[in-house]
Length: 158
Image 1: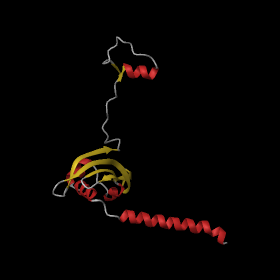
Image 2: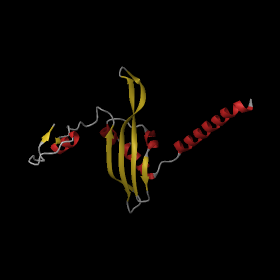
Image 3: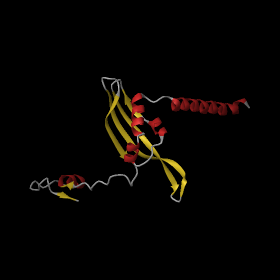
Image 4: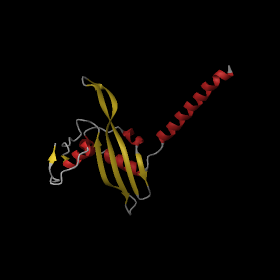
């Protein structure tokens, strides 16, 4: 019996240790630049510009680099989405966009946002870019042919 229970006991101990570690990380306080960014996004004007209500625990998934004087952060922003359009009370969290921020510490000790960029993940909010133009040299490289020396490099094809 002891030999057959050992894998179960080891697996249970590993799961318990993993859950304990995950809870410690989840309850850990955010770095100060993340807190500043979180307060900035909590404002009504930012929520209106984003077009959705950011779920506060989105900041738990931040990653990046925080130094004494500079911080570079990436934060996946989650928002609530109705599962069925006809049932608005049944909602699930969905990753709506990715936020990239560059921040600096001012001489007074306050953190200031230098640059803030949102990369929308929703197809309805994403900006549609024009089809890139393909120049003769790109087409020649794809087909293995050489570019005619008399052709101008500014000629383009769709």
